[in-house]
Length: 380
Image (tube, rainbow, N blue to C red; front, side):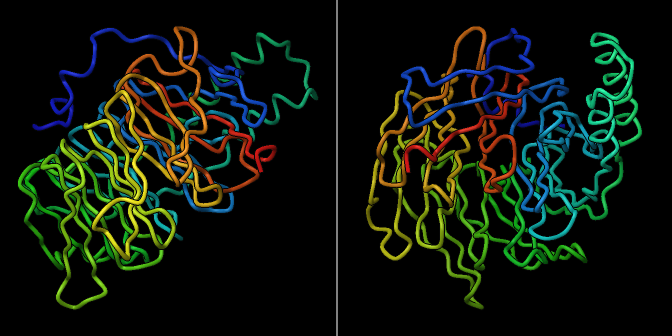
């Protein structure tokens, strides 16, 4: 059975450190314009490959892990609401359906799964009721009761069977994403191919090859029939499915493996690489980047905030850096022996919903999933 763990076996160390439950801190170089609050979502037993937030009005957090599971979390209470255990290999990516309670995961077992992501609010109500002060339970005992009841919720809320299994790859499925309308799914694999599936029937619509080495990620445009794949062959490719003939454009903007390429709004693509650079591209003119960010460590799955035009960059060296879309440095999230990540940061994502307790999330191979609050108001 193949797993994605071998992809970075040279990058990770053998020891793990315990995650913290809550940390309040500022950036290493304090700025009056930004603040950060950390929450920890604990439960995975191996490194976490991806973190994602649903697009619903009451968003939840999703995580994909090398422990062969995917999880859905309540952002406010830190509790796991649902655990998916249907894969037989590392779960390498997780994406929520744009408007339905469905999740999509890609795995080292060479498949992608679509499964029901409906979660019960029970664990949220448990925490709220026990934290309301209307009972006679003392503080330490109350925490034990919360843990016990939430453990029961987690045990009940375990899903083993997908609603649809998408097969056809001959290698690890490193990532899978929903196309804009949610009726189709695109997958990326170590077999150097991408497959476009019908999400309702599981039928393969288009299989595309061309990358010279393993793929590392795939991202679909949120509103248009576009997708971008990244690869260890130092290129990323833009798939335009608006054309019946499927137009594919190849971009050679990096000197080492491209680990991430994401859409930023309707006009830009942002790519990150092991060559320690992040580049911003204009979709209308992709001949050269409009901005280049140079860093001191390899870049993993980055994310762009649409509302603030802010790029969050996760690194192998445990740092998370923030830049604006023009390549100007904003800051760096804290990292020490007591806070932040203790191993490589594999993925970050933004929440665009204003009423969430955190608006930036990160995960890493230290098994930690952290939620951060970045305050942009004073800057603006």
